[in-house]
Amino acid sequence: MASKQSFDEATSALDQSTAEQFAHTVNAMRGKVTMLFITRGLPKGLQLDAVYRLGPHGAQRVALAPVPASLGNPGRPHAESPATAA
Image 1 (cartoon, rainbow, N blue to C red):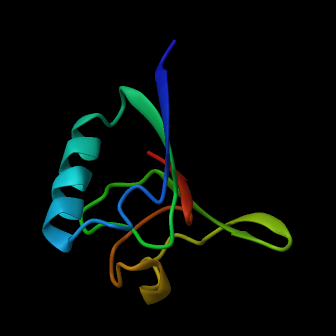
Image 2 (image 1 turned 60 degrees about the vertical axis):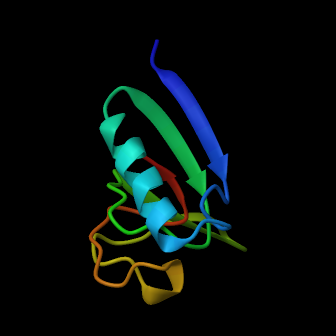
């Protein structure tokens, strides 16, 4: 069985450089671990399989497009929103 990890605002208190290093470390575990991130912002370089926006009507998949600037990474491709499994 694959390992599972969850992170709640894991990068919110990190400076940009440290957050990018965290993303690099997480990316190295891709395909080996299922991860769920609950966050308001995504570190630059984080590779995501899915992104969901949580709101008053539950979780909604965000269309395949750049992550909105409000999520912290304008121009970064993704698959779904703030809670993410990578």
